[in-house]
Image 1 (spheres, rainbow, N blue to C red):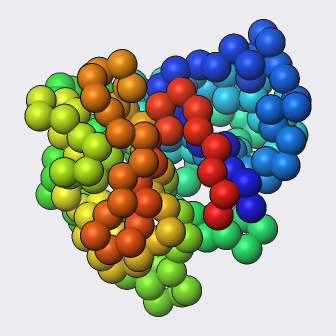
Image 2 (cartoon, rainbow, N blue to C red; image 1 turned 60 degrees about the vertical axis):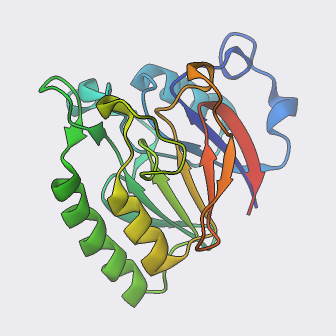
Length: 196
């Protein structure tokens, strides 16, 4: 299965310069957050593929206008074409205007859903906005990852954890990192295609 992951930065080849050739063979799109609802609606319409998303820290507008035609997976498990996917949106809560959580709040959400997933067959992909702590995150509080995601990886051992939030231009950012548990951690900022 070929998957397109997108996050944080709108891609012109998916909008004004839509290029269907670049989507040849793609089976599913995953949005890791901080993309406007109207953008996701356009992408899902043009691509005519399942699009699953989690909200980013700047996606508070989703409360009043969620992306139509797309499947929100924040705090949920979904199955598409036999692939099981679990999602968690948001970042560390660094002010009251963002969609954010404390480490303890996220840990409660993650552990509850991870054990549910474990009992029902596990998951192949975890989609998050923020990265796991220590794997592609940064030192400042707003861009610190959640250690709870490391717990999910240890419990479930998914093939991939795909996240956004950390823009590639922030510095020396690795696109793909291997977690000690064997999970490949992918920074989807902008766009990234991979095979499952």
